[in-house]
Length: 401
Ligand code: ADP
Ligand code: ASP
Ligand code: MG
Image 1 (cartoon, rainbow, N blue to C red):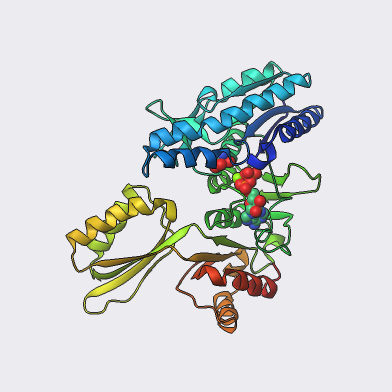
Image 2 (cartoon, helix red, strand yellow):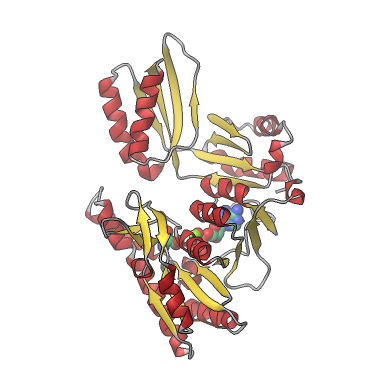
């Protein structure tokens, strides 16, 4: 049985006409002797609209109820697609995450897939049905519906493909993965291939085109992920294990994240126990920290800066308040007006000097850097949002992105 998992994102199913277009594409693929499993996102901005309603009721709605609410968007799109396929003469069945046995764990609104009961999908495929699965959702140990984090339908698709050991195709509103978001830099290059490792960094650092967990799962099961347009029939990008010739470019991509805030703690007692206590408290709340930098000790105190997603700030603030009460010397500062710019490339492993080159480019452009962190294949800079356009331009031109 030749199975293909296809996933279509929100804008690709944003209207009845788009849903009918998706139905025709699925039928064309099915007619090439494939059994089809289709994962969908909610229509257009539906998830945002649902969230807006929640926040009209409360500043801090219970996360269980947020999941209950936002998981409904996918139920609308899957049922409509099933009806469209039926109207075109094809047998289909729409199923929610819980119905296909997508077991999740972890915190509400950012849970993780533990397992999928593939017997249910296989049964319907044997009946020659097109199986349409709601993306982004599953059911946890308490039988509560949970969601996988914004953009999580990619992860549903990758997890199903991993379980079924079959092809995974992600269809979206761009023609593939570009060296950087083509909306920010229209001259960006479309990549034919990108390694799991680089795509994982790009996705984690703000390239919203793919959900980072989907890449982890693709890599774990060694399933290449094909990303392409749901409208234009042009070749897309394959995300797969790196090969020698993929290592030629020094920088493969650039990612921008405007959804992070920077927190600086001043006068933290110079004690690893205090630092550990602080970050452990953040981790217990599952707050996602990215960049961390610490000054060298002065007067037995250090300053620590780090970035957190803005939508996790209110949880982080609770810990800041707790820690400043416990250690009255500590003061903190929160900066929401920041932009995180990151460059990613496995070429950096073998060639040095990228950070220096970018410092020179930014200096020439008069752009101040507030924080920098590096790892083997990435460098991230915190800059002012007003400098983003210029910084992207000078880096993209220099590194031919
Ligand atoms: P979908 O609803 O199909 O999941 P998303 O909005 O999640 O679509 O992802 C597609 C968007 O990702 C594109 O419209 C594009 O603006 C953005 N994007 C960010 N970085 C990149 C990149 N490096 N390559 C391509 N698209 C990118
Ligand atoms: N509908 C969800 C979101 O908007 C999941 C997804 O699109 O992948 O985040
Ligand atoms: Mg997406």
